[in-house]
Amino acid sequence: MCWVDDFMVKAGLPGLQGVDSVKTYSMKQGEIAKDWLVLDAEGIPLGRLATRVATFLRGKHKPTFTASLDMGDNVIVLNAAKVKFTGQKLDKKVYLHHTGYMGGQRVTPLKKLMETCPEDVIMRAVKGMLPKTKLGRKQLTNLRVYANGEHPHGPQQPKNIEIS
Image (cartoon, rainbow, N blue to C red; front, side, top):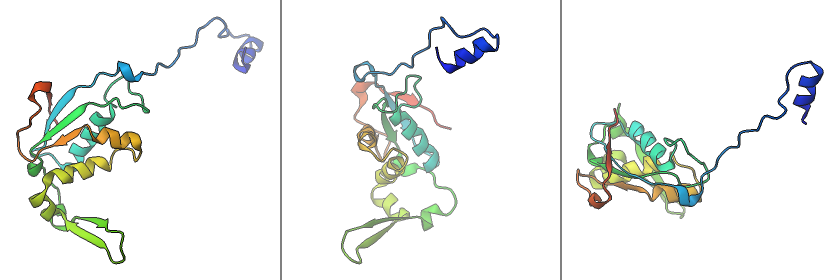
């Protein structure tokens, strides 16, 4: 008996004796079913798209979500070159990286990155919304981004998902 049961008995209230506690069920790696999902990025703001993709990659949309396992689905994003940017982000947003040498900071404007590699913009946005751990890096491998509207994953029979 725990202290709550003792208190209930002393107060003359019906206690919790004989009531089985409900155990939290945790999924095992072999029980996970992964689906293939297709998202069309045309006309959708980048942040809204990235949050939905990150949710699908982590598996938080499933009722059996377990934070320590790779429960997420495989996500295919099409039309990455037609994603929408609000405000003046296309002109003012820049991506930074450092080479590791003194004075080695490199700046890449969003506009240039969209012209050369639009897939990288979505990959970076989603990567920033996933955990910064081994599991987060593994979940990012389940994301495929294509600049146009075609993909080679037809045999996996992906489901179309609408994002408003």
